[in-house]
Length: 113
Length: 114
Image 1 (tube, each protein chain N blue to C red):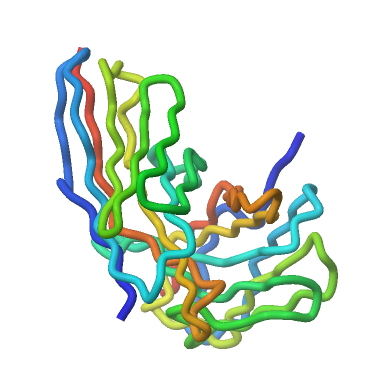
Image 2: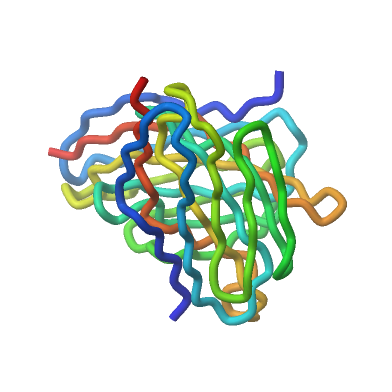
C-alpha cells in the first residue's frame, strides 16, 4: 500500500537554529514528491516538487532534497515566520493510482524568537 | 489574481440533508481535486478530475459525489451527510507545465454534521 510518513510530528526550534524535517515514502514507483506549507486555518501552499533521487530545490531558507526512500526539508537559520505545518505528498507511477496524491500527516514547526 | 475559491466557508447541517460545496478556479487548470483533513489523519484525497467529464475516486470516496461539467468548477456533493463527514474540506487545482505539478488549494470549508 502506498504510504507517506513524516518525522518528527512536532519540532520546536530557536530562531537561527537550523534543522531538517523528514518525509519517508513507500509508493509503487515514485512519480513526484511534493512539499507544502500550511498555516493554521488555511489551505496548503505549494513549496517544491522533486522528481528523481539526487534532485535538490531551494527557496529562501528552505532546501528540499530527495533520495530513493525519503526526502528532507532543510531549514537554515529559521525565523518565527517559518512556523507552520509542513506537509509532504507523493504521486506514484502505478496504473491504479497514477493520478492520486498521497499526503503525509505533517510536521508542526514552531520557531521561537 | 490566480485563485481557488470555495463556498461556503463554514457550514452546519443535519444528518441526511443534501448539500453541495462549490469549488471554482480561474487558472484554466485541467486537474482538480477534493481533500478532507482530519486531526491525526492528515489530508486524504476524496475525488479528483483530470479534465471535463473525467473524474475518479481517491482514497476516501464513500458518501461523496462530484461532477466536472465545466473546466473551472468542481462541486462536491454530499447526498446524505452523516456525522463522520464532519471535517475540513479543501479543493485544489493544478496544471502540468513542463513536468511540474503545482497544486493550488482553496481556503477550506469547515463542515459540521449534527
